[in-house]
Length: 429
Image 1 (cartoon, one colour):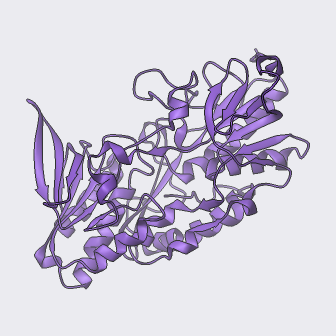
Image 2 (cartoon, helix red, strand yellow):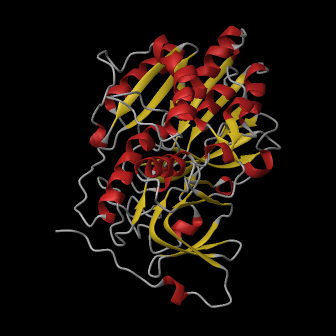
Image 3 (tube, one colour):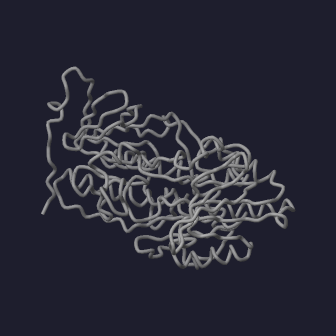
């Protein structure tokens, strides 16, 4: 049986003195997910009225920021003008979202505009909650405190690594979902290699302090990563959640979960790479479109296979903001986008949704300079290797894909809405 979409006369819900516009499809977010969906929609049907709400002038290839922090990629090569990737035929609304009103099919922007839609695609990414770690906003980018999770901070990570003279080098992982679950490990492995090349590893202690109970969610890849940890003699500390940074004494304060409760532990640092807490954008969390409770609380409430909203059928979501039980990567977007596009067009034709997403994601885990484990998996941690070789092994060929192949595919194929023939590579973070 076909799903019926509730039609609302959104114009009647808008005050007469309010600036408003109306579009057939409104895409919130002009990042990897939003641009890819818009481009694919318009390639399928040039007559569609598609609008993209995106406030930024620049578009960033975030997966390369690990390599920027590792000194093998220039940060300026990770950014391009957003205008060059807005698909032909799409309307760019250079604004940000303040409020969602799905009952009336309206998006309200920060500039006060009311945007009516027939169909809504939510792809705003996630927000980085720097403020949730006390002292982080005041210390980030100086005195050894670094992070690869922002364009302006990634170059400082390399400054700290290449000038490291020894001591405690701490790499953290928070108790929230993050962009690419393997990313916090990657920079640690690169730093360890750099310390060895610089002759300071023998006088250094490298620590991975993670709020998680395991080093990686997929057992097959976790075994490989643990062997790398053992080979590099890295001190892994589980259930350690960073909550405060005391810059005056260069001390990191952790909440550590134990059988008897939570204990506070202080560790001195000389280098502190922080993976900050992350969450869905506030306008998502505060809307009727968010999951109300449970594991996906705050993220967009969608069916994990069709990517259609579980309450409002004319709403779809993909990318980091969606409540999907899989790792948040650009590779996931590459597989999600065709599902959203096909199901949205199917819905327009009042037919049953027939495209399903299997949770595929890809995280090229850099285990050292010239070494990458291409971790490809989906729902229930099922492996989906692209190549007929053991995917758990560290390989130089995967390093080349990470450094050269994936950025090319991202800028020249994925964002252009170009089809991928056969089982082509994912874009990892």
